Amino acid sequence: MRFPIGLKIFSIAVGLLVLMAAVALLSMRMTRTVDGQLAIIDQNYFPAYVALAQANIRSIEESAYVRRLMLAIGEQGDNTTKIDDLRERVASTGKQSDEEIANAREHINRQIADPLDFDDNIALARLDDKIEVLQEERQRYEAVLAKLIPAAEAGNKPQASELLAELDGWRDDFDRKIENARSEMRRLAGAAIVGTRAYQQRVVAIGIALLAIAAALGITVAAAVTLGLVRPVRRLLLGTAAVEGGALDTVVPITSHDEIGQLTRSFNSMVGELRVKAQIREMFGKYVDPRIVAGLLDRPELTDTKGSRREMTVFFCDMKDFTAFSEGMTPAALVNVLNRYMTVMSEPVRHHNGIIDKYIGDEIMAFWGPPFTGGEEHAGLACLAALDQLAGLAAFRAELPELTGLRRGVPEIDIRIGIATGDAVVGSIGSEQTRNYTVIGDTVNLASRLVGANKTYGTRVLVSEATSRLAADLVETREIDSVLVVGKTEPHRIFELLGRKGEIAGDRLALRDAFAEALGAYRRKAWEEARAGFEACLATEPADGPSKAFLTRIDQFRAAAPNPDWDGVWCLAEK
Image (cartoon, rainbow, N blue to C red; front, side, top):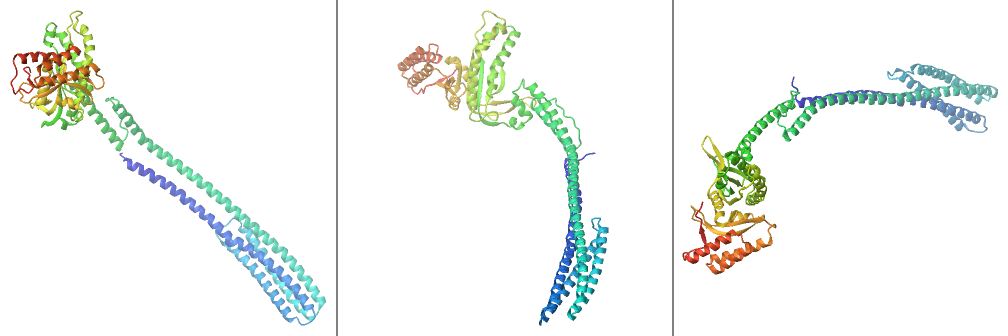
């Protein structure tokens, strides 16, 4: 049965609320009992105790007024007003004492009738009986007092003295008994307070126990449900980490039918698709650049068949004198050498984010540009790749004896590179059945022609003017010539790639400056000045191919001067 995660969490919350509500209700009920007990102590026990104390006080006051009345009656002179006042006080205090005793009985009987008690109703009933006896004794006291006052006023001293003695006896007995009743009432009130405090402590203990039980139950249920949720999530996290690490054979078990179960099922399906795509990438990545394969699979908009025009840098590299090199080798050895050569030469291209477009015999075609590289960095990356290719030649040459099986007469391997930057059409080009994601346009043709131009100038890497300008922060170049390639009507300034910026020796930079001055003289048709400048370059670098090429060209121009409108542009005859 499927229970959504939301329902599980809601059920936990509701269960905890119900438990807490039950604990709160029970605690509230018991607290109300405590409040009720405190109320009856305040409304019955204390008032009864106070009433008995007041009755005792009024009785003592009444006795004192009786004594003063007796003295006033026995005095000489007219003191009628004083006697009347004392008689009234005696009557008032006696009445108040009776009322307080009656009030005490009323509170005691009200407590006996109250359903909320302290199991002391029997003791209260006995106390009530004792107080009732006190009321009867008060009546006898008042009867004796009613005889005493007339006897005193009549001047019957013997009778008055006898009645006064009897009255004192009743009063002493009454005071003793009411004091006992008051003490008993105080004891019962104290016991009620102690009982209330004990019940209150029991309420607190029960509340804590119930809260602990509710918390334990809530935590147990919540932990069980949480573990049921966390375990599959943790398995998903471990599976995700495994997939991130390349383990595309990961399968996470489905242990629930809720949203996490659905997520796990989707995760397994996704990993299956990733596994298929990885297999496709692995298979076709050997024939097509992996980033183009990724575009076909993940971002088809990058390889749109409509194509687009972008600024790109195109790169061509081929092996010098490959035909002569291959003639003396067996097919197996030749394929072995070519495979290793392509591996060594392709690595710098890929390392610098270039796209290998195709292999044409011993030639490598690659390109840089959006969306694979930034719009301002592709020229510099292509130049860095060319420099790394040149740096890797020494290691490749050291492998040739083992690759070819020759121990002597191993041919000298070198490469020529042409790089051009400019507008190119980029897209998937081909038939409906077979397509190639490539670049086409004048920039491609120029880069291809620059490879051949290296033969003319005795250079290894030639780049276009746009490439030199955009890569100026990364590499050093020197201007070689202005040329007109085959099939084009617009001349191009071409530059030799010297090395990384900041890593060129001082004599090479001096050679570049001297060559630039000689090239300026050449373009001004100052043949002698140009010859001297190029000869000075050769004195600095005897193997400088461009200087040799220009000296040969100057000799030709001295023998047959160029047209008067000649602008210094050289037409390249080779493709």
